[in-house]
Amino acid sequence: MVNGVFWRDLTTSIPFLKMTFSEIDKLKETNYTLIAQPELNYWFAISSKKLIDHFIKSFGDDFNLILYSSKEKDTDYYVLPFKVIKGLFKEEFYSNDKKTTYTGKRWVGTIKDHLLKVTNNPTTIDIKEYFANPYFFQSKGPDESSNDYEIENKLQEINVRIKQSKFRQRVLANFNNSCCISNIKEQSLLIASHIIPWADKKETRLDPTNGLSLSVLYDKLFDKGFFTISDQLEIVTISDHTNLSKPLIDILNEINGKRISIPIREIKKDFLEYHRTKIFMERDKRTISIKSKQP
Image 1 (tube, rainbow, N blue to C red):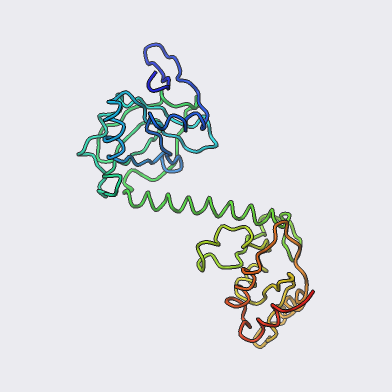
Image 2 (cartoon, rainbow, N blue to C red):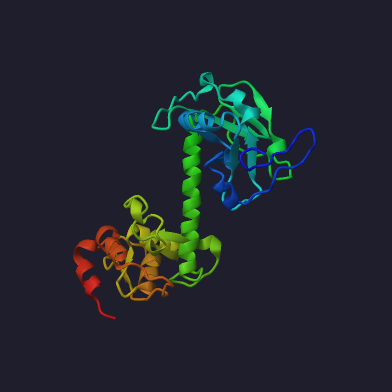
């Protein structure tokens, strides 16, 4: 046992203690714990300052490196006795990006098919004996030629997609998983449409009250400013139909004045006002009357 954690003894095949995330979290003072990315071959980065100045200085090699994939997966983690892997973490194997911050330089590495590899170090270590999940797996990730910058960009892209997925779930749920105009429920046809566009304000990007559940066509019309929403949740379409096709005019006439379905959580009026004053095509001549309209 090292700092409260049992690992698999290769001579006796005794499995290490299974832990929940909350139990792992309690060990972070005496063990180096960090999240690795299973989508990218368990990509991880280790601070030289934290490893050397804190853990090695405090515990020698009598501590563990604990890599886990998420808070939700209690079986998806490695507990690696540092004395087993310490040969990988030498100065000559620092990451090529030579990233230097308050945390110092760093090593970056991956785990593929239970083989631990640190960038620039030709040595790999088989660590499947230290994996909590009993099932062997092969993770899919970037090829070995990917540099650290490419991997970090992919990490950022994955994080954005995860957050956008959560935003979609919350927005659709706010409208009972149906289009707030047509009430259709087919998930493949529904869009979590931003009221204040994603690119305009960072602080509103993931706020579910900054979203409308719209079918694909209405999402495009709303995004392009063909219609907007009053404070009373009534649809106001553009009045100038010059150069519009008759089918589009018919669609706009059909929804004009219609009230969208009432959300579970109230849409913020500031967000609606932003759409009326910044996105709506006829914002310059109709914003005031729209805002002051009474139910």
